[in-house]
Image 1 (cartoon, rainbow, N blue to C red):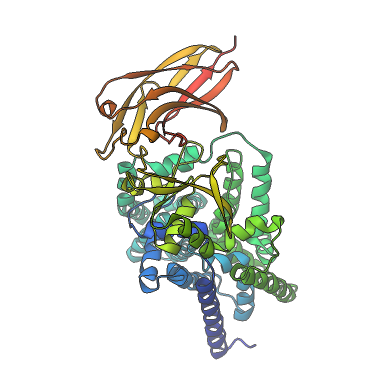
Image 2: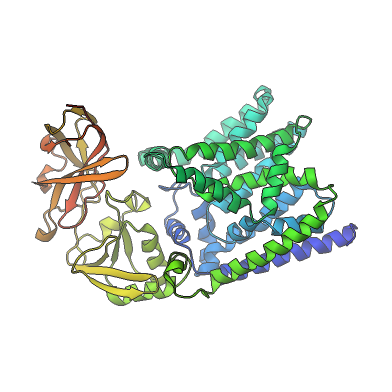
Length: 564
């Protein structure tokens, strides 16, 4: 095909229209993934922040779902933003052969799947591409308008996903001369001011996102599989073939003569190395490196566009990618794999969600469903049935947005159906498309969602086997509690002991909590015998109501057991 303006216009229309139609069909006929349902739940209560993520993902779901109360509505704005993202990539590359560039875009699997799923990664990609587009203009023209647009874009980037700070940070690191521009400080000041509503939300909720992402999520001991899984995930995100080759040539490219190209290379290498280093603290998710696809494509494409082998390479990789991507796209909609244990995990992730929700609803009736440590299940159930559900998070799981929402508080005193996430002997069970689930009915459900235990000390040093006493007080920011309303679910204080994320023991001395103890300002004392084995431990004082596992009721006490 030639390169005349008319041919380019027709090629462009055909590509973007095809991408739009395919993505809309995929969005409509694919059941929600667990995280998508969780973000849909976000959108039912728009705020300036959420436990796991900033608010753009919720803000993008809200208007689409108002138009269509189904999977398409949840994903509508993500599909549209994927079109904008691909067009921005075209503007950044300015390819000489438009059709060839589109074949490369279509050969990168991550663009297909992030392009229709309602996840924070799509707005992150979109605002990363628009940031770089504006930054390129800013390098050429140091003007007020482009500076203001950059500030707004930087704020939206950070409000999409916190990983956006890497793009901004590596951009400044690659070009320290930016610090000499007056408009740079305008951008920084304006961005900080625009970001203040989110900061205020974090302050009001005691910085849950900061604590989770920097400390709680990444704690623990190092395992070699963290690094190996990360390296494999990078290959998958850049795969099947084209993205890997583009990234390799982008890294090899000589960028000394171009400030913008040097920035792209810094972002690519910096992002990959940063998350590689993060594997020494914990797991790194595959999608975290998605922003590295942008500099890999822009810089890599520019440096191999004129290679003799590139046209043939483009054709081959497009053919291979098209087959693989089509198979995956088809399977995401239709479960064609046999019912074998080896396929159980992927089938449960992608399929039978609607039938699963209906099976749970048949057992629950109009009772709220309490899922233990399963925030995705709670959101999926609510999406597909419209019925009330919560995630009852305990110390064996982790906090999430359900610890901030009032959902748990609103079911106090109601009759509920509870679904545990561990095996409970003699509990009834039922089969669903996602496996067998145990359940029980609880009348007059009671828990302690607003009750917190405040130890008087956060570090303890003791000898093996020594009995120590820990003072604490009990407080609540709400008056909506009644700890004594159900004799079968009376609250007890438990001492939960962990070492390197491994559960060690649960000590319960039948320390009963009473209503009068909350907010009375008094100090109470719990005795605890430390382990015989020396080492560093994490100790928590948590509240368990009846047979339910201890909730997440206190901050960590660092316990160091000395040698004999």
